[in-house]
Image (cartoon, rainbow, N blue to C red; front, side):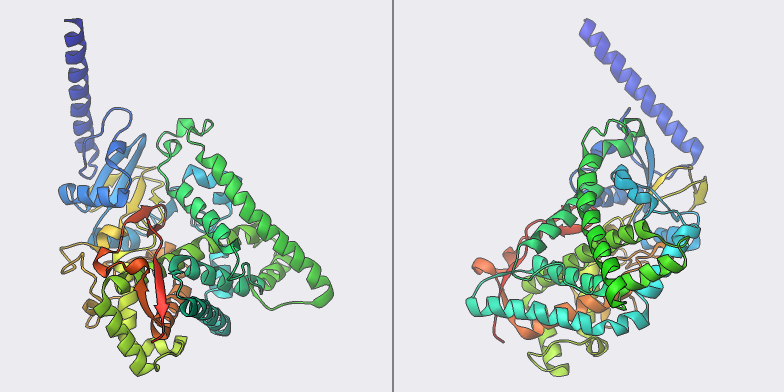
Length: 493
């Protein structure tokens, strides 16, 4: 009888709590959402693939939904219309960042252009990025570097073609992206194509992305910050430390060479000169942390997009054939693609767009935060709320995309939609003030790498796997990677 009384008491308490929560939600004019449980809120609803779980919930509660993740009120945006409201019409109100506790390692959030609030320091660093790395003139000047790295990628694949060995396409693309960035910034390769150092750095970058994207109890219950119960911040401190140590050594090496040989006219030289002339604008620590941002974000997202694109080509042989026929007609079979060719390759561009629609590199973009009470779409969003824009769900919204789950590049042939943050049905790089600064480089690199791979070889899956049997399972982190690396065998055209 005592147990029954206790059970009934708990049931009554839970019902009473949920009733109060419901009334509180209505009185606060919060967006609709599932009723939270005591203490944990809605954490139990996230699962291993939160982008899928929240997309499913949005079909029940709507395109703007509120959840309680531990102690944190979270707004989830799942349609292009509400994304436009948040990322364009009220961009400033939603432009602050919700910083994961993992990014407190080495105080990275205090130096990173990704995580800094929109203020003078952020504007200064963003301006340096845009003018010295991602401007049209700078990208044009470095085109020969990208061309050389793509040539090396094809040479590596040709070696495997001759031996009949499979290529780990994600790793090969990562190595290409890594050395491209390192040549742009440091005028040197960071890894040898035939060594394991690229794998080590890739694993390090992936570990960073996993830890940063992993659900962390500290983020949901800030009172646990000093305890770090899952050890995420401790592990991130180790990972960041290794990358910072690497860049610290490269900067020391350059400072020594500048004394005796003069400048290199690369990005590092420009940044060091800026530090000497305007130390209040950027210092050495900012350079190290900017490099950390660039290498972690730039290598992982580019290689992941290339791997997904090749996976879709291999799973849809008729799409691969159509792409190869266009390449052969416009560029000439067997030739490398140059950046100037891309404008004459509409189907290749459509393949890249469709890949980014179905497999956005960052499924929730980077989390935002409101620093004061905001009203959006008739609902109130309380100060301190976290905001997640589910780009993965928006790209698969069946109310806008016909056959949303199918891979159909043709859908873009008669469409003006692009990925530059103006069309909110397709926002793999975000939009507004916080749009990814690396967008111009990605728009050059991905089609050239993909087109060159398809125009240099025929491809088949390792082990005779049939296209329809290719495993397309996702692995969730801040970025969305293939759970199982894509291995394919190149053969002569």
